[in-house]
Length: 344
Image (cartoon, rainbow, N blue to C red; front, top):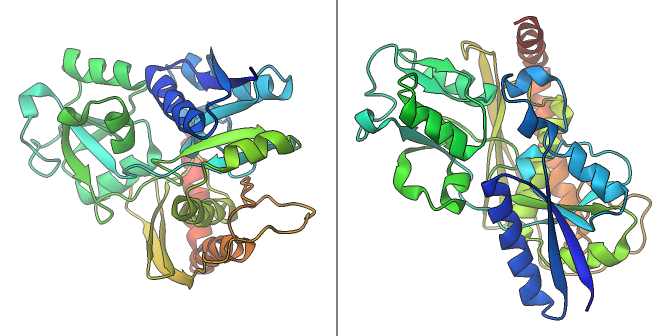
């Protein structure tokens, strides 16, 4: 029986996410066996520094890619939002699985259960390790203070509950759902309060770009709508040259053949911001195999089963929206945010 080796981070959430992908693959390929190989990444080891300060794009992916390169694993499961928009040569995202809730959620300290961010007392401290969340929420809720909190979900929840330091913390709703901790969600943040990170809520399966066999194997997991939304989001971020060290956020929706993309950039304290929405017509009907192309990848993703025309339209939407923001002066906001972040 053929054994497929699946790489993952060691955290409980990463294992749950990997198990869910393996379960989907088993349903398609009952004759295959899967072996899970768990490892720690730089991002898991450096816990005393804000993510945006470490200055490394592939914080949660590098060690996993190393194992992939050395043929120690055949595929790797990631949170799509951890995967840079430009992957190292030789790798590609062979599947983008159906997205879960992409929004951010607020988990409150037990003494503030029943509150919202709006009704928390003046100067309450809210924990988040994300510049994107802090910038948007500072703008929206100026009476609150935002402070970095690191560690996996279990660690962050423990810090919230046991230390008297934080009144609330912000986490991705999808992670809380996957861990079975929906009961801790006190508030879901909607786009007008806080737009989400590129790729948030979706899982990506990374493989060696030259491994056609593995690309075919995992390609069945592509969810067309999630894939097209995430191509647009990743193209937007790539064209802005955003990353962990600047506040960039998005919101996408597919409706009646139209893909809507809202994207925004913020200064670190949220005082300066710019956002716009654009839409594009996407046709996903014809399922056709494309002939061999020089580079089938778009923003690091390979999806031969989804019409190329639809993928290009999604990518163009992301690039167009980024260009619009850059023409209106977004580069200045991002440059200042980058410099400030580096200086702190």
